[in-house]
Image 1: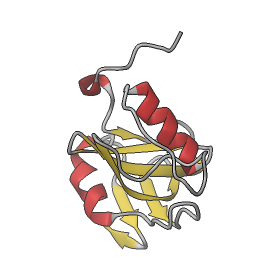
Image 2: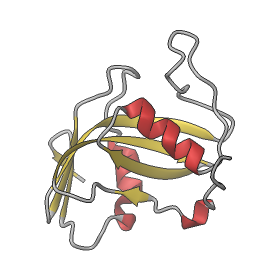
Image 3: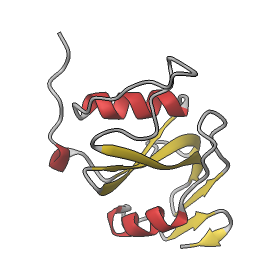
Image 4: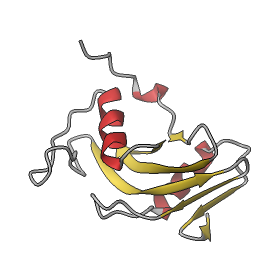
Length: 129
């Protein structure tokens, strides 16, 4: 039996890595609202796990049956890449080979109020947000 979906208002808008170091991230809009989810696994797994957790149905790409589509009825992927986090700073960079997406600075800017207070500096592509 599948787990019961988590209510959207109970899901943090920004889910940074728990530990310092480099991880992958996915930026998406769910129901028109921005979210940022980090994880140590492939972008496609982070995306699929997030959508499943929230009870959002999605289709897979015709080219790759393991790749969730970039857009669905209630979601759209806005950016992907790598993130490095330390106690005071978060830096977004790189890209996703599978999706051909890079970090989206505008979307990260929209989420700035949701970052933990101890994060003093947010960078995207070498630029401070």
